[in-house]
Every structure is written in structure tokens, then in C-alpha cells.
Length: 170
Ligand code: SF4
Image (cartoon, rainbow, N blue to C red):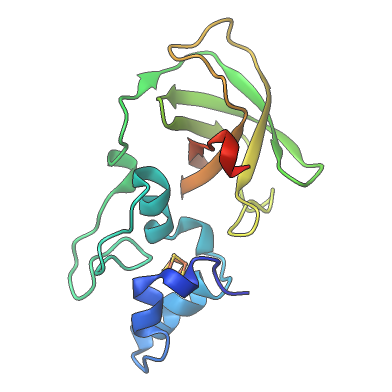
């Protein structure tokens, strides 16, 4: 299944008919439902900055025709506040799967989570990228947690960067 952003994605529209091997591999791995789809840096950019990514940003985070890479982990729009000793109980939305994760930090835009299980095991992916916060152990947090649905913006092994979803987007 193709990525839901493909109809408006500059990279996809420009390269979907390309014969170049590198583009075919990227399209297969990210845009056509491949295993790397949740890691697409264009989606991450869109999610974090609420604006279209640069035209030359490829889904793997490299700028096309260069070896320069944008590190999304360092591109958060809001100030992060470190969180200690807070474990969260979470659920993959629209599934019965629950899991726990440590909250690493929180900002006005979202949270960073360190999972005890690999996201692949939980089948968190392009079509399944929303997480519900069922509860958390901290008595107080640097920023009140008043939104319960998150969307995965980026993944690095068992660490997830998640953006709060606006209530009207549910
Ligand atoms: S996976 Fe990324 S590059 Fe591919 S269509 Fe979706 S947003 Fe565009």
C-alpha cells in the first residue's frame, strides 16, 4: 500500500517513474509500504514543523544528490524538558496491543519515549502510527500531559519521537 502522503509528496511525484536504482529502492522501502515507511524523514518534517519539507529531502533523511543528512532528533520545534522515573502505559490505537515505555523528555509538541519492546514487534508502522497514553507513573511532569493521543514522528531503534495530536485531528 502506498504512503497516504504520496499524492502530494514532491519527492514521490518527482521520482515515482524514475529508473535510477537509488530512487527505486527508496520508493520500495519507504513509499510503497516498505518496512522503513515509519522512518520517512519527509513525514517527520511534516509532522514536527506542520509544513512541507524541502523539495530535495529524500525519505532517508539525505538531501538528494548529497551526503548531507538532516537529523530530525535535533530539529524539535519546542524546548525539551528531561523527565526521570516516569513509565507510561500505552496502547497502539485501534488495536488491543498495550506496552510500556519510559518517558525521556516532554515538550509542548510531544514526548520522546524509550520502549522496552521494539516497535516492529508492536507493528507500529506507517498505517499504525498512533499511540494512546493510558497512564503514567509520575506525579507531576514539567509540562502537563493534557493530550492522550500521540503520533510517531521518528524512530531510532527503540526510541520514538512522538507528536501530540490536536483534538480536531482525531
Ligand atoms: S514515504 Fe515519505 S517520501 Fe514516500 S510518499 Fe510518503 S512522505 Fe513521500
